[in-house]
Image 1 (spheres, rainbow, N blue to C red):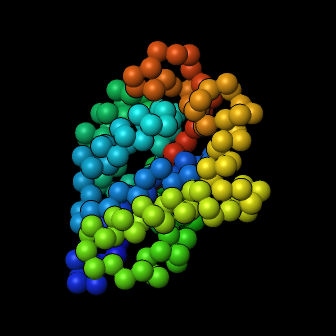
Image 2 (tube, rainbow, N blue to C red):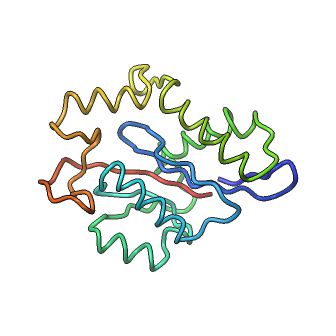
Length: 183
């Protein structure tokens, strides 16, 4: 997503959403977002939440860069790219982006990049921990993920994947897909 500070500086966000729990794992904010930034965010999210079987994204240059493609292949993470002009193929990310725009970007006056990062992180925590979602039976994404973890696989990971964490050696787990979107 793109926006501007009150002073006219560009803001871009890379939003990383878990399609199953609807949790927003990250809102990375900067003036520009390069493939290296996407890779850093993905590595951090995987270290914290585990390795997904798939990552769904648009065809932006950040996602089709050779460094990203090589890293995904090395870590056996498949990609699902949405077709240009078909946002419904990435409905979870588009829904999140619409809510983020209406509930945060359109309501806040952001003066600096640093202020934007703080405001966006506060809103992300609210979205995950306090804001109920109809699609989750009026649970928050955090509560839904916790309930699924307690009912599920015996894993401490709320939405386990088929692949081990990059630094783990335990057995494979059921699939997960993560959506991301940089506009």
